[in-house]
Figure 1 (cartoon, rainbow, N blue to C red):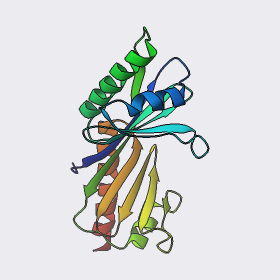
Figure 2: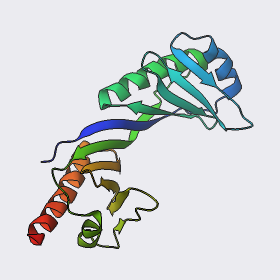
Figure 3: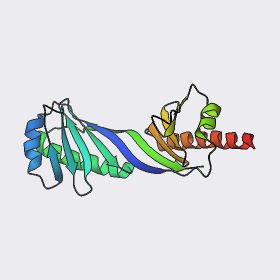
Figure 4: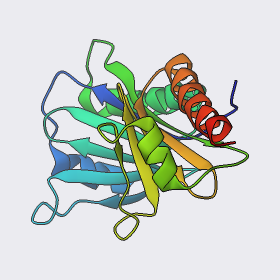
Length: 186
């Protein structure tokens, strides 16, 4: 099993009502638990906030959702959901439990050795890979629900999944395929 590190978790919290973003921005500016507030409707259709103490990015959308971006564990995600919901409960006075779900986990792993990325692209199949080093320095592998970037350094970045077991399987799968391509070359 290839070890991996979680570098980012993204998820949504859904409120059952439209959000008045300019009123939220005014209120958030007065709150100690929020480091920064940016609301410029002419430029962006969302309210941007950063929550203290770790500067977690939480954008709010008029349609009644907010996203939590930048935590590194499911536990941190749940803690941020509780913090955001506590604040929103004070402001919106809702009588329901907002739904929250993790929608994407970005994980990284390291492989010991790699043949050339061109050789990997051929071995993995050109219909599942994209490698144009003039435009982007990594091979892009699309396997099922995940997208895995393979860098010449041996670093892998896996995105598109929200389940740790699926992430582990996707990383193990590509590592095994790369390992078998190394073995068949020797």
